[in-house]
Length: 407
Image 1 (cartoon, rainbow, N blue to C red):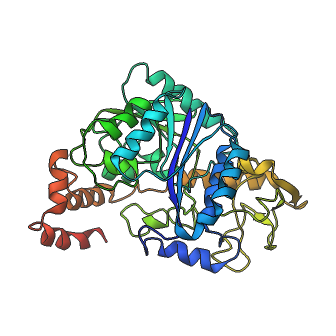
Image 2: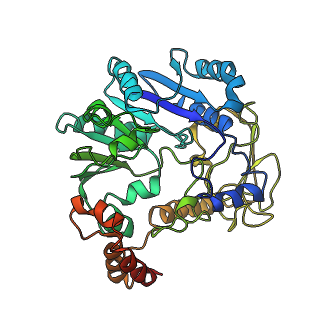
Image 3: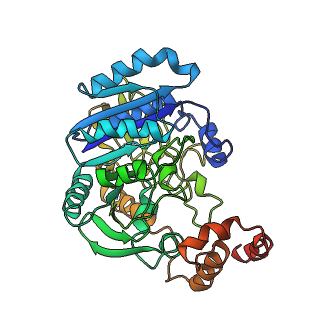
C-alpha cells in the first residue's frame, strides 16, 4: 500500500464556525486543548509509521506562519519514513494532482491511502482490522474495477453499509450490502463514493483525477474533483471496517446540527497525550479522580473532563490503547481496587453504543422520520435530479415549511 499525503498545513480553519462545539471542548480543559495543526500533522504521521507501506509520498505546504519549520518537519518525516518521497507545494489544481498521480502510478503497490487531510491518525490498538480489509480489497480488485476502504469516520462508515439505520436509509441508501467478514462489511455503491478518507485502488483515484478535463479551477482535495457534476459516477466496491482504523482528530462535532448527529459525549474528539513527542506518556487507569499530566482512563466514569471538573480523559480498556502510543509510554499506574473485568465489559458496551448511535427501524416512528427527511432532501428523486432539487429556488419555500416537521 502507498501513503499519498497531500496537504496545506495551517491553523486557519477552512470553514470558521463549523466546529463551535469543538471549540467549547478545546477551551474547557487542558487535556483536550492541543489543536496546533503542525503538532496534529506530526501526530498523525507518527501513527502511520505503525503501518507497513510499500512507498510513502509526502506533498505539503506550510501557511506563512509555519514556513520556518520546513526543515524541522522534513527531518521528522525522514525519521519516520527514511525512504519517503517529499515534495513541497501542495496540489490545488487538477493539473498538479495529475502530476503527482503520474509519479504515484510508477510506484509499487495498487492500493493508495489518500490522505487529503492532516488530522486522521491511526488509532487502532493493532493492525488486525486494517490488514483484513486490505486483504479483502486486493481480492475484490480482481473482480471489480473500482474498490475502496473507508479508513476513518468509523461510526458513519460502518452504518452506511446495511439497511435498517438512519445513516444508511436516509443518506447512503444507494449503497447495497454484499457480504460480511469477521473484520469488515462489503457494499456496492452504483454511483460511487468520493470522500477523501478512503484507501483506493489506482483505477479509482486515476478516474477521479484524470477521466474528465475540469479546467483550471481550484481543487484543494481530490474529492472536490470526484464530486464535480461533470465527473462520471461509477460502480464502486466499498469495504467498511468493523472497528476503528483511523479517526478524525476533531471528532464528530460538525454533525451536531445534522440529521444524524454523533454526540461528543459518546465519541469525543482526539487529543495529543502529554509527553507524546518525548516518549513520556503516563497512563493512569481506573481512578475516579483526574490527575494533570497523565492520560486518565476509566470506562466506569460517566463524564469526560470537558463535561465536568473531575471527569476522565478516555473511556477505553487498556487493550484499546492506540498501537502508536505503546512504545511512547513511560509509566502505567493501575488502580489496585479496580474491577478490571467490569471495566472491560463497560468499555465494550461503549464501543457497541458507538456502532449503534443512529436511529434504527426498531425505534418507534422511524419510518415517518425517515420519510420526512427524504422528502425534504430530495431522496426520492432520481440521482440526476437531486442536485437540481437542492439548488431550486422554487422549492425553497416548500423545504422550509417541511423542515419543522423534522424537529
